[in-house]
Length: 333
Picture 1 (cartoon, rainbow, N blue to C red):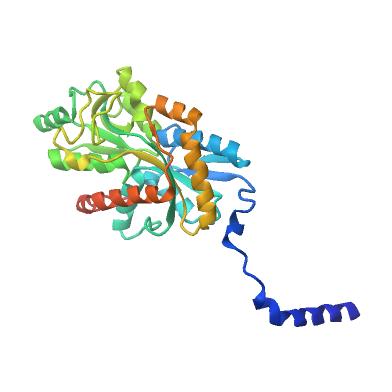
Picture 2: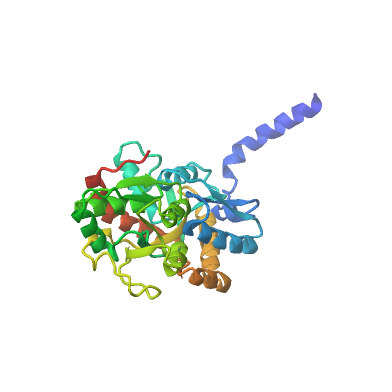
């Protein structure tokens, strides 16, 4: 009893001074970070460009941060399911996301439906732009068209053609570009959604899809082998590795032009010092000679930028495509 009384007295004596204790500095968040495994959520099936780039970056970050950095695939609904996982994750730096140019498009689509899974403007913080990868519009070789303009004329000239196109899900970049193409060319095709670019591309190679799109890194070899035909690139200029493939702007479809990218995001309330650490490590990983070599071999352009640069690119694409998406009235389910 005496010892209990002494503890109570000591606690009471200390109470008036509790508010005078110095505040813990914000940088204390990062002292000892990371202390456990970091997850990179890829919101698509394994095997696509975004998944491959995430694994390159994760491997290097594991080596430099002293803790495992693992990739977890959470595909579906144009990448919005995986994005929701990250938006709702604890903002402690241990759950981040590698996404691509589908992110602003699918997020805008689901926001216009009035039932958003998250708010792209307020629920995420940029970490780093890892790499730029051009997006390609593709056809199976059996389709008798050499470029996107010829493809449009083919469909316009034969309304009985029952062609389909594949995408990585409702609201994904190929879904948006496919619907823009249909509207501008005044043609019809059936949309076939997949949980990732890899399964969609395999169906396109097999000839069970007629038209689709993919990031250059994972379809370049198929193009070179003649398994797929590149009808156009959505990039602003022709590509050095495929100089004969025209841009969508050259072919009369300027509203289909969009920069291709892959970058990292964290939950919005992640402490600044933790974000800064992640940004430095991710940028250094993308610029490491071994990673640069592997990315370059995949026809990807290594970047390794900071968080604000990643966020600025996202805002530009949202601003450019929001009016178009509202007109198309697409839905994400």
